[in-house]
Image (tube, rainbow, N blue to C red):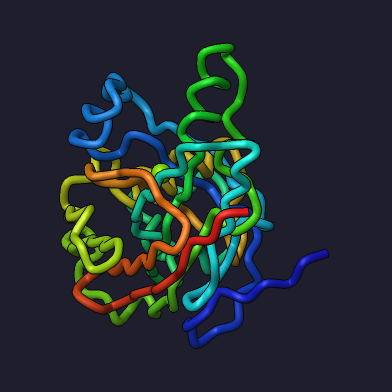
Length: 222
Ligand code: MG
């Protein structure tokens, strides 16, 4: 069993399930010609995807030629719970961090066109870089945090968590109706517009809340 700690939190959490939300920002749904969802679009990434700041995203070019960055606010869950009401949901949050939902877009499109799950497009090794998290009580308003991502110093993504279609309590409540949440679960809350391809040698930096959580990773082709 893997035993990977969420970096930065004052309490020790081993990463458990990694939930992700798709199409949670209007401008991003639009740039990929996807309809706006009536309910949250939920998928998971396996834990082999996790790397930390300073690490390397490895792109297996025999499998994909179009790997995209998706900068996202990531919420960590601090306690066990199911059927959590939106009113109680924020009590389950232990912290916030920046993450990048790395996506092999060509693989995802091929799988989607066949009606297959897109796990493999999102689940390759190193496809979930995360920065150091901060404890929840240090973040006054998680629904008003800037999200930025730069590639080689150039701004590629800029958004604000106030534009999320489904808020943190809505997401926690919705997921917990289906899947019991546990300490150490992560929720990638969706990406704003500006997703784009990565290339060998790229240097990526991303942050939320003007430095509340940041990360820096490099890209390497394999
Ligand atoms: Mg995403």
